[in-house]
Image (cartoon, rainbow, N blue to C red; front, top):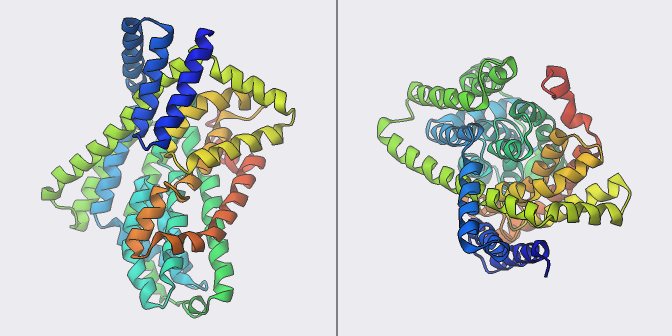
Length: 436
């Protein structure tokens, strides 16, 4: 058998089989990569190449932003930020029918954009919102579904670790990706808001929950949330102004969150070792995935899989729309059982060259693939945000899935809008002049 074909077969069959039997994603990616290299090189050379690629792949200054943003998010989680952002969201949407559900959506967008983690957002906001919604008579499954559906919006709105990983794989600007994320992030939020508004027409418990907040109270509530939201302004504004890099902005975010937690008097020094340990564990998982995916990328290139897939897709259809729809369908399936980070690391090198041939900007494609894979985080069977949201809401997963269906439909429509209206993604990067 041709060496490239042999390596490709080992990669495809090995990764699929290990994922199906429930092996950790890092093992499912790394082990077939090494075996594929051994099959086409001698064992010593294969191990050397794999180790070299793993080290090279993780030895990036840009990647240093990830542990610092993870640490900043954990400091935010422990620093009393969630309650202030939820109160601010309540001020913004308190007059809408189903105000608590809308508050949940907006709070997840605010908190997710600060913490950069969908799971953390679902846990922090859900823990605060679910008791309030139960007291108002909300169906627990619907309340959990609102929380689950809106939590991933923070993975699109900067700062986002997922976009940093895509930047590494695609060699695109972190600043451009961050600015571009606002458009798709807003589409995600509006999709959830639209579903809640429609639900308010047929759910009696949502009709009478509007609330008028006195203007002085509203002003004070928003003022208390300003310091937390200011972190986003500092991070993104500094990047756009060229004052610091993504990694430097992440360090500044850590210092800012630490000081803010102390000022709020909800972050205690005795909590810091635990926060550092949790951040280290999360970072280790991400960096291991990046490392093994670098070895996979070398093996994929050796097996000419990206070129083979490109040839197959371009020969299958000559329509740009159809090819993009096929890619998005594949990613939707992949996203149901794989986290966004490894999926981006695996599929970006395969799909990005094809989209560039079709004239799709890498920034636009990055937000398309991120939006797509965010849907996977709330979709069974693996969707980690789904299970965290159900646990926080104190309900079984099955009724949450049923309540989640309208949100999934709305988000699919949102994905199509992001795909076929490039201005949603590209308008702000053009305005701020961060496109290369």
